[in-house]
Amino acid sequence: MPRKTHGRPPSITLEQIGEAGRTITLDKLTIRGLAEYLNVSEMSIYRHVRNLETARNLVAQHIIARESLPEPHHADPEDSLTDMAQALRRFVQDNPGIGTFLTQLTPEHTTALSAIEKTQAGYATTYGWLPHQASIALSVVAEHAVALAHLAPLSHRDNALAHHSELPGNVPTITSGARMTEQWSPDDFFNWSMRATIRGTLDMLGLR
Image (cartoon, rainbow, N blue to C red; front, side, top):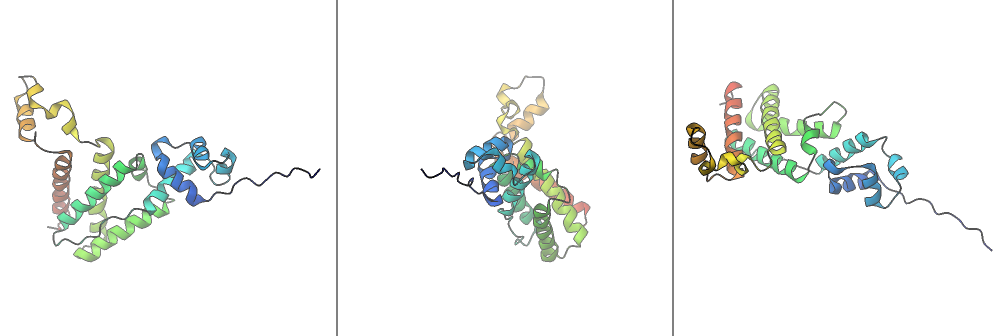
């Protein structure tokens, strides 16, 4: 009888791990989950990544590499920065867990840093800003956009303070604000908050 031979374990690539992780999402990522999704052993995953943290970094940079922010094309930089903030909000909402990663970048996250450099340099060139002005302006706007999207994905429109009819009678100032914004959508809240941030940032940097 011929001897039984054992086939080689299925080979996988970093690209496949990254795409599997994107589908699983960073929030739910585990080594076991990656192995099950790719139909391989956990050892096959560990041949490519040292631990879960390494896997998270790989997946996060895979996600970022496939994202492109809108280029600045409006005459008023406020409008371009608002477009960028909206794009970042969608990106964070579509990729649970990426917001945390974006707030903890280190020099080893080269893919993310290259994307940030390209975007900031594009604004400097388009609007004639000094490099440090572009870097500070975009960093501040991006931080606020990511934080709002990550911490309040549907905006405070969906909590009790948005419904003035349910508020107690001894908070008239809060009630007044809630009444004035009761028709605002989550997008309206986000855009208003971001435009306020953008205008203040541009003013403080002397760019308006």
